[in-house]
Image (cartoon, rainbow, N blue to C red; front, side, top):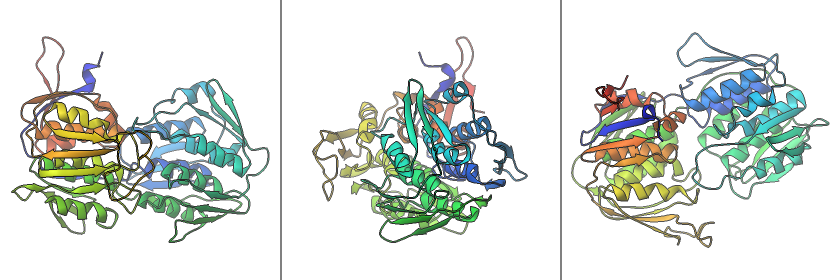
Length: 452
């Protein structure tokens, strides 16, 4: 049974208008916090959003003896790793299932303590993201790994050693694992077919500030020369381009007008081109980007997700909601996560016309084409969406359901809204500030509660 506190009533049909702010990227901030564990001095991280992934990593760091305190400025964390210690297995296990980030603690803990324990991992159910490759990489560096009933126990009998690694796919998580392990390993590590997302580059900047030696070539090759020790850093996290794009899609789907303070053009260029093709309008200044629906029909498009610098998979789900309002047939080919289009079933229940296919409907074949996954979609529009009962499946799909509910006629009950807190800071207050008609359901016999 769903907790009533985890349900949101959304009365749709009102355009979202106003201003919101995005702070540091969910896909960078928790990893930069982990990087502080490598240092011999305190670090200061600026622009930290109040999201669940940050709370999870903060708790894990504190379990290992790292002091984490709020700084003088809003969104500032001061992390002091000078008293790193082993954590109680039961305490670590309490975080199992809440995040996949614990896997990135492996390298830093092996360097600092000589051992690490990693519990079972959670995260969004959007397709296979196997952790075996993380462990294979750590073995190449010289770690030994013992599988136990409650997780994985790792040891580094000697100093970890640099190695050559080629990723079968430019995975962000695997690239982060190599970076966080290689910087203190003996010798040179060469990583080919690496992920090169802006958040990866920002993590490299963090590590370089700490004293690491890292080069990034244009052919997706990263070379890391291990050093004997690292210091602290002072760093302002790159703004969250994925959250910014979600609000942009919300403006488009609800025929609204949203200024996203903190959004940056450089990291969103591919999205902005696609947004313009669909018929959305935007205006860029030094402080952010304004996104709005200029009126008239939206355009159907062909869209294919890819790793950076392609169209990011996290941009896809919110934009698909807007595509239900475009005239004609839009084709979406998802090449990053094989199960990411499952969220469209709920959109069809709301009145959308979306058909899924196992074939590659994009410009090129992808690794899912012969594996029986429903990874392509044809969206027929425009269609009038109607309010419905919705159960949030994952982070981006969950925000997409909110967008659909806001664009729909009538009232929707959205279940599982706490999952959105993983990556969207104060999203309920932001929605209310944009004029959304939302409320938390009340207990029997009580009037509905307004959103705080």
